Length: 378
Image 1 (cartoon, rainbow, N blue to C red):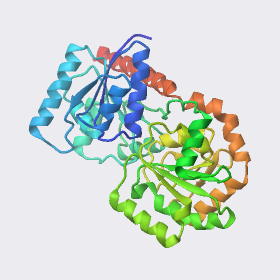
Image 2 (cartoon, rainbow, N blue to C red; image 1 turned 90 degrees about the vertical axis):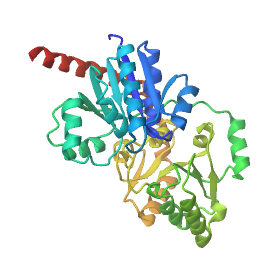
Image 3 (tube, one colour; image 1 turned 180 degrees about the horizontal axis):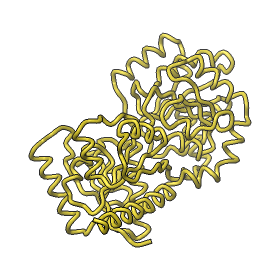
């Protein structure tokens, strides 16, 4: 496969799943000896994560709103890099960077869609996608469905490339016991883990409401909420809900973790009670790759990741009763954990960051060939 010069644009403020995917892909493409450049929002966590992972970032403003001077600066910087570095592929991952990429005069412009939010079907968006964008990557079938409905006349190459995750590192027993000690958890407690930012759309309040029913059968059950960021007002609501339900002894809070490996080691079930979103659920993949069955809402991509009655259960969102029943079912039936463990080699293969990067490279070449053929015909 020919070596490429690839320029990723990622305007996210936080190190969310899409930013993690971009870095995973960029690292692997770089290891494959492609020239890889990645631009991030200046002084925000994705930029810091890039530096930590060995990717030297380009710092751009990526203003969330129209800002004449900052937008002009970013477009000029992108155009300069495209020209000087002889970029083959300019890959935009969000709305702001996609708009700016349209002015960069790159040989090939690829857009990834990471969210299930509909694309507003107005003239400006139709122009961006039909005229300037050479190909589109959807990170799940759920995202593809939204794109097809939003842009029914889109006729450029489009592919679904499901996400992946890096391998969860091996953790020592001493690290696991240290975590148990810090959280005051004994070895006999069934442990639920909800690993997501603390925000209403992630449905932590639904999980809290399901816990009293679980405690009737498993009085030592523990539910751990781990998040690197949170809405303070929503966290206050959750604390109030805990007090009302009288379940404070069953709940543990964790903030930012340097490694999720010890947490995955003690988890009996990964819980994803989201009310929406989940264009691609990276955490569901991390649970499965760690050998942990998943109970999740039937939203977004989760039905593409979790196999009901085999690797977990899917429930109607915003239904604490259904959630508690599904959690009890998985706790009671050890075959779920056995099934996930048996399938770990398959998960490690199909949900690997390397597979994602390879699939994207293949798509780049496909789009380049199609565009080259079109240009020859004209």
